[in-house]
Length: 309
Image (tube, rainbow, N blue to C red; front, side, top):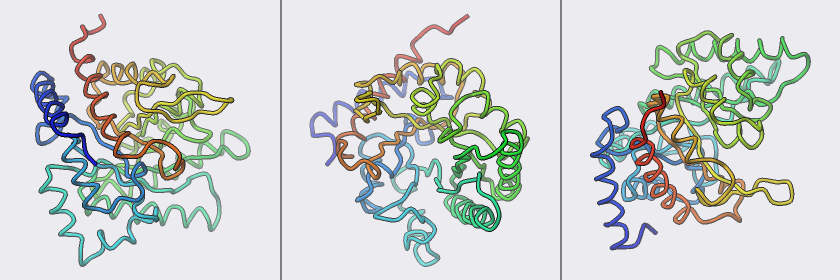
């Protein structure tokens, strides 16, 4: 399902006017707004439904995070040797880009498991390179043992992966996730990694809800590292965050967008609707289309707002 006609036509007309009013730096390739969504939000959709929905709802990009029951993206036939070129054409024909290829690799592990995690990340880097996707997401995930060596271990792993990814025109992004949801710790890891091929995927929900951090602090301390962004909203119920449609919860998504625009952020605003992990939340046809409408309004308001002196 897409936005009903004529509502969809009206939405796309407003979208076109918004894009025309934006500074060139905020327009994605193809003249669209730099908005996207993660396939985590539509776990039952097939490849062409994902691409068609993105195009029909004004998105510029799709973030790959599993598809039809598997998170092992490199194993999918759509990205195999026999099908890859056709899949790339299907992306291009719809004026889309793959914004990020998101792996499950955890960098806190040690020994044989750690080598396997790095090997898995390299498989995703190879796929990203083949799809001309600029980023691969990895997790630091857990802070195990004494802090200093744990931080150094994750930073060294990021640097190693960055050395592998750089020649393939891919950067490795550490997500603000798990035990790593505060700006000082994330900045320390990224500084220690010390690689131009390593950056941050700012999950703005995680730093606000789990890290209890004001987004102004997150952006001021981490802005130079933020290459890609996850946005979503939630409401606290019984001490737990329950995901809700964008702008209906307690997460300051509009303010997060404003701060990114003010900071000169040039990446995608990617909707991470966790339908794969929380099947009870709204269907992707509703939530993803709604995100496009709401964040279009946020971007329009943010670009119209006078710059802070």
